[in-house]
Image (cartoon, rainbow, N blue to C red; front, side):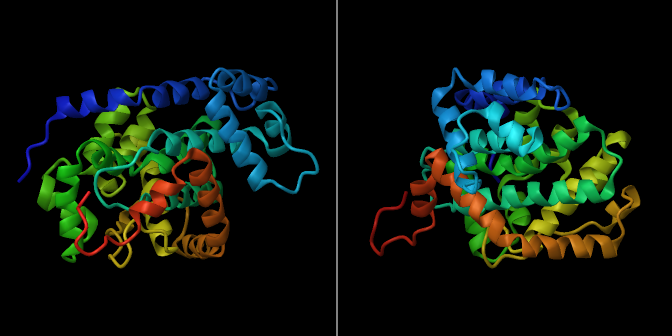
Length: 312
């Protein structure tokens, strides 16, 4: 079994320092304040590259407006702050991992799974109700980042990730393949360390750590939050947005219903709505990947290897 070096992990993620700083700054903006749009615009203006990419995303998705949206403050006035904020974070997240990996891994499917889980979590949270403005904000963020331990593993520890992929290729579910190859250092544990190091909200850290095992949540006040992310992950997989094609979905824990007001019938209907939204999610993912500069990578990573070619 592979030995995982936690210090090497912390040293590796220092190569992407801008992402946690950006998210922390965005989280400091109050959604309800009238100045939120201008604060968000001022925050991104020094980062001309990211600002331009976000505006391209907004204008491509919302092409029906007669004139181009020229600034984030204008986007907020037209689309609302929560949606604009989520587009900024999703664009920054994908953009931070646009460099080619060293092994064959379909990042396009990964981003679609992440965005689909965030879409599902938002729908489930609205149906559940009772979440504060801050909690609703962090639910989308936690759902978007819930599996980011996988992209950390693929980016910085490709040899270890290759062992996991070999397990998946042999027919093992992904979570089981991680356990066989890495022991306790699967993507939830890696994600927890990185999220904590980045100073992410406690709810996000717990959701990243426990999204496959909600019963292991050690914070009673976060059981509902973690249960919702577990449910959203499962809903995304049922809607066809799994990270790996042809593999069984991760195990579902029905105990989450003990922490939620949502009924099984309500969840069934919401999951069906996720199926109906597949085209919308695919379109948004395609746009986000393209504007982040990761489009060529996603295409390359999903291309079958040529016979006799060198392994990456």
